[in-house]
Image 1 (cartoon, rainbow, N blue to C red):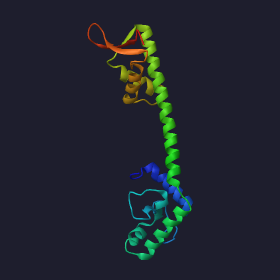
Image 2 (cartoon, helix red, strand yellow):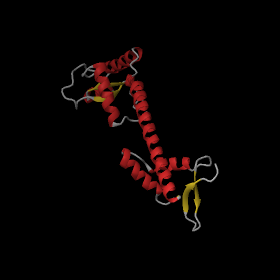
Image 3 (cartoon, rainbow, N blue to C red):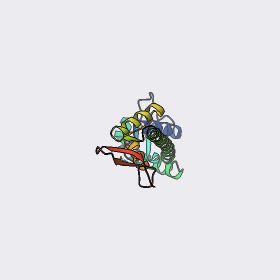
Image 4 (cartoon, helix red, strand yellow):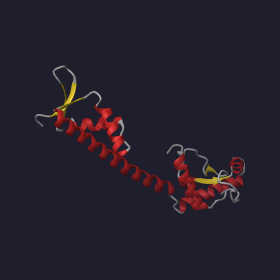
Length: 187
């Protein structure tokens, strides 16, 4: 995991406060304001963003830790304690976040597919074909209007699926050489 986003940091801070209390893990003093704590890597490896390896500290304590053997020992002990107590908060956050994000993305994708298919069916029933030019932005607009989401890339992918060799629609050219989408005559 790279650097945590602001949303991830908020979750991490909340988790760390629940796990360790609202105090600096190095000096043990309570934080006076919510802006005081910083995210500190217990093993000093900045890319290791597991919650097991993170703690809340004062900026001054974090700087002091670089040359203070007592603070380094506190950090090492804290990391070992976190790992032995199986505080795997990051995996919980990450898995829940990914599941929630995946289910939301799948739901949006399914809705966008339905909107794309519905648009093709209606336009082809009415007109017999659709001019390919402008169809993607039109469907993106409809999707954003109906569900608040819809990217050109996702609509393009759905359109490719609906016009694939086994799908009921095809992209072809009319007599004037313009690309159109029409119902496939044989599937």
